[in-house]
Image (cartoon, rainbow, N blue to C red; front, side, top):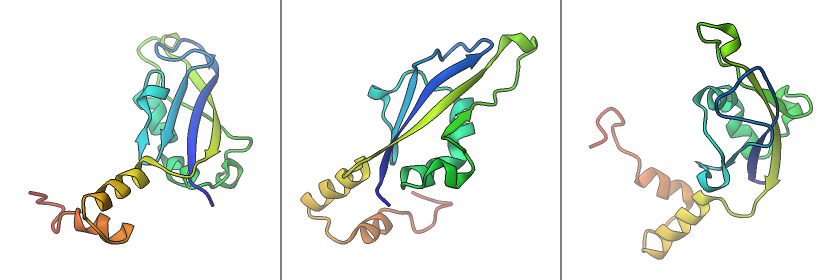
Length: 134
């Protein structure tokens, strides 16, 4: 399975959304949200998408995750007035990529003389006691 760049593109908005309109996008390439390729970021939309993020960037098809044809919606709760917030529907697009920002980070570490395979490099920088990282 190739790594994938993910694009969530707004295909419909039911009701009112202060952030998104049809055509708005959020772009991910593990491990980052590519801000320069994204429009607004809504925490509710990101949380709705969160459980599907990791498998999708690793190439698992949306239908294998129960997402049918690759659509997801935010489930932001209405404010005091139910009409004050709508539901946004996103189409998930997967684009296979050769290198991710994380790959570039690993290459940069190797150029700086921090050698080892990716797993060793990652472990070397992980705190021994995550409860006391400093």
